Length: 152
Image (cartoon, rainbow, N blue to C red; front, side):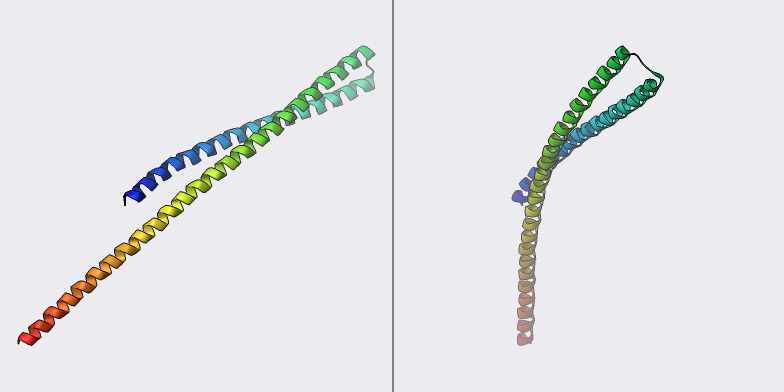
C-alpha cells in the first residue's frame, strides 16, 4: 500500500508539471496570436497606405513626396518582415512547448497506468485472500456440522 501512496504522491507532482507545461504552452501560443494580430494589422495598414498613395498619385504629387511615401512603405515592409520573423520564432517556441507538454502528459499517463495496474493487482490479492478465508470458514462450518451429526 505504501508503494501506491508514493506513486500517488509522484502522480500529484507530475500533474503539477503537466499544468505548468500547459500554462507555458498557452502563454507562448497567446504571444503567437498577439504577434499574428499585429502582423495582420500592420499589413492592412500598409495596404491602406498604398491605396492612399495611389489616390494621391492620381491627383499628382511631387517627386519629393513620392520619395517620402516610398521610404515610409519601405519602413513598413521592414516592420512586416521583422514581425513575420517574430511570429515564426514564436511558433517554433510554441511547438517546443507543446511537445514538452505532451511528453509530460505521457509521463503522467504512464504513472497513472502503473497505479491502476498496482491497484488491480492488490485488489486481486485481496479478493483471493477473502475467498480463501470464506472457503476456510465454510470448511470449518462443514466439519463442525459433520461432527455434530456424528455425535448424535
